[in-house]
Image: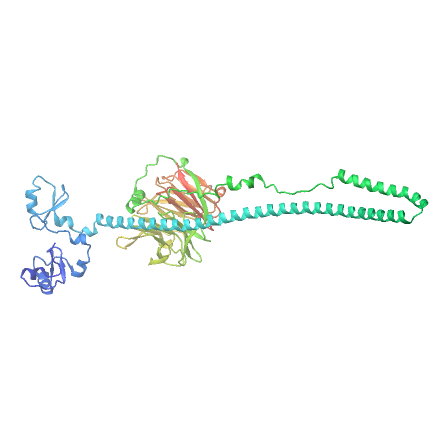
Length: 561
């Protein structure tokens, strides 16, 4: 590259310093206004692409440092050696690549490089990596929030455990003190009653003593003799009372003490900790799925080694869709699930654990398909001619596309958006050039759903209770109809082997149909929790089947064979 792109290269060669205003990558130098004009009309340079010098300076430094001519021979690259995967000047071909045979003109190699598959694939890969990094960042941030919530829950649990222990100890303490009070009160009552008896007998003895003294001093000999026998009997009674005191144990000295339960006494020694904090680490793999890998998984020709009879569904979880009229569902690469609610019209996003992530108001919304990079496309059913593109992360409608028709079921095939347009048939919109086209001209019923697999299109007809498979030109390959097993078919999905999963609204079941449309099997019914089932989605990466009732309830199954 030129040593200084801020000044005009031609003027600099003439020893004149004039600022450059544009940059010619083919000439590898800057040009001032005057030289730019000559450059644009000169026969040798009139076809060169130029860019404003400010835009060129904003290119990444690693791009600016790329030399567009041979550093060794100071000649422009003209040849590309496929063997060594490098550009060459004419001298390089002679000196270094003399034995090489696979050469192409450098101009042929770089022609339309910005619109090449490799350049677009790199763009998609960068987008996939950025999306993956964002999902990892979001995953870790969500983990931080959950850790904080778990910390608060554990603290609350510890405090509740401590409170329960305190309450129990308070109860035991209150009970023991109650027993102590009853025991002491009884003992005090017994002693007080005994003291009253002693006091009464003591008064009787004192009265006997007083009477005895009076008799001795003033009574006659006859009086004394006559009362002596009675006094002897009374005193004998008192002596018996005195003798009974020792035998009855009334003089026993009562002593109280408390014996603490052995478990409580050893509590501080035996219990070394209040509890423990257990760390449980569960693998939380966030799959990195490139768009080209996902498209390849959808486009690979299936080689069914297992029949539909070998399919096994295992319930992973059931949860609330937070919606009352589910018309569409989809799974994102990070495990989140999307549900459309037709009226009053919103999209609900549910976290992998079943909690509500967000709700996005949209107006009437029917089916949904995930396009990658946090973008979903949703149809709007009968009351609107628009297909909306919603950014889940920003929770807003990013773009609305008027398709001039009602639109129900929707699917993505390569770079074509295929949708059911009711009276206008089955239509498609290309993301390559935004062109529109018709696959099937014949009228489709309302509430038709569509799914693609390899070079086929499968769609439902609720009124005829049919599932129809066509090629990409609309030619019918097979049609399935059996009212004994499938009535009012709605949502439809296809797995990696081409097996077709269909919701039967009135038959209240999920039926799987073989890739050739000849065999079928009921997989789910009311026994599995289905109640007015509406839609389903098969995730080709995780092999999980998402099934949603029209109101609130949804189920996630692992599909194995």
